[in-house]
Amino acid sequence: MKCTSKRAKNKTSAVRILTIVFMTLFILSAAGCGKLSYDMPYAADSIFAPEEHGLEVTKSKATPFAANLCVTDGDVLNETVSLENAGAAALFDLKNKKVLCAKSVHEKMYPASLTKVMTAIIAIENGSLDQILTATDNIKITESGAATAKLKSGDTMTLDQALHILLLASANDVANLIAENVGGTIDHFLEMMNEKAAALGATNTHFTNAHGLTDLDHYTTAYDMYLIFNEAIKYDTFNQIINMNSYQTTYYDKNGKAIQFSSSTTNRFFKGQFNAPENVTILGGKTGTTNAAGHCLILHSKDAKGNSYISVVMRCLNSDVLYAEMIDLLEEINN
Image 1 (cartoon, rainbow, N blue to C red):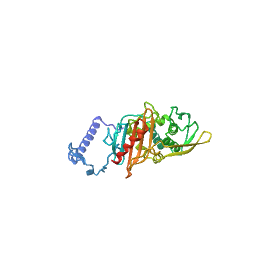
Image 2 (image 1 turned 180 degrees about the horizontal axis):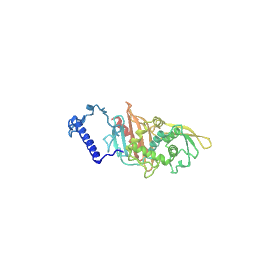
Image 3 (image 1 turned 90 degrees about the horizontal axis):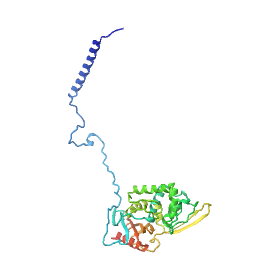
């Protein structure tokens, strides 16, 4: 066995260390004694230009949330329209993204059956028109005087039929029918309604039911209704229904017996009881009435050039006042 002294080991270690130091100094010397060059040297006042260093530059920017919306933070009034008999009202020019007239548009109010616009949106987005809806006891409406289709447990109809009855006849039991079948439960459907409202920017809106019958915690604003209706008219199904004067259909009870249903629209412009101003064509809308909400109406219209408008009037004392105020509002399209 070969033995190595401690002194020899220390000498070998020392040689190795000196070799490493020498090699390091040689490398640094070859590189300029520590004066290393960098492609992108740091300087406190320098401006980084990525294209100068062969980096791809993408010139883009985020689209603001309200870029395609009409926006106002308060009233927009003029001498030609007073709206003194409306709790809130507004006229929105969709092409030019302008608020032509507005009164109390951010004041919280009961929406009554204007609620059903959001009900229709959620149904269209999450259901299929040929989907069969089945009524349960949960759809019943007990409030006296509330409009219904008189559905009974076990009755069936398609979502397409239900949407027509919802928007034209404003049947409150059909609103519950849609909510329970599309949402799985009515409560889940309400969550979907409130989530959609928030996504649309309707932050002053809260829904506690799918039909709009009065509840203290069920509210919206005229401006939020514009946001919601503006979303609804993106769907052909919605536009086709609100443009109709009447509707007839056949659905079935739990035993398969055919039940005939017919109804005319609640829109008094389409009933021929009121006329729109000259050069203004009403494409459709939704009414809403309860004691707490008063009389409400939201419309989609166009001018002689085909430009689109949304108008909304809320909390009027009676129907005649509501339509008179709406006509005054629509006159602004021609001014």
